[in-house]
Length: 403
Image (cartoon, rainbow, N blue to C red):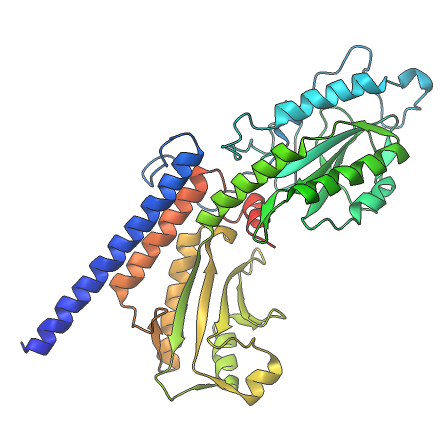
């Protein structure tokens, strides 16, 4: 064995060890950050009980579960006429709403996320699996109690408002009934309403002025219904938003695998498009190829230009590129480890077809050991996400890691 071969072997071993140590340090840093935010609770390891892969645990409004109906306000048929005798004094309404909102909010400002109840956990009231529900751990929620049932169309001004963060409106037809996501054309009338503003996404945390604008919107809309409501403390909500944003920033991981030709060789755009479409990708308006899961319609990973220019049908016809990047957005897909394995195999096959090499960001070839270390990084991120009750690919994850 020559000294060159021996040196290459030693260098390869050192590289693999370095990658493993780096990923261990990264995982340790994320775990420490989460433990500090959650009062020193240890991060759950892969060997401990965790949600099953791909399982979705739908969010519900924790403090709005089948409230006890007051004797003086028995449930009424949805079609029953509402008279003045049914009117409840605004102060009493505000007290009931305040109780609901207080119950729905987390008690520890440093622990903004809590386990989400199962979709049927509403004191026997069934909720359709996958149905959107308010999520008080990641949204600022203002509950409104109309004097009389109102149609969704009465909320048009609120539904069309643009505040800088996603705003959702929910209603329920009777106390204890499931919450329904409202749109301007939703039929029927609702006895309780909830306005839900997302506290954080990839554009950052909801600011105090933004939250003040949200409360102002509700205060202008409520008299038109009319409805009573209790305004949240926007300073407290802004603090929750900052904490939530910091936690999500530590867990916002995207994995890229680059397929690159050796300079000065390039890949013709027409050739690339043919290979990509044969592998199951489709060109999207976003400027990247998407690999879409057939049974769900969800995008699992992307194929982007190695250059900063987006792909278009015209550019692919006229130009060439030195390479492409496979990109996995870990929090936004269900079962990220399985998806990474699938993406890794697709990258290897494309590299073989295009006579290129799978490399890292520094253009160093990635062997099986290095790819295994990257897989461990994905696994550690999934464990950390589940520890703070963000199931990858769930509605909660899609909201927090969108924008």
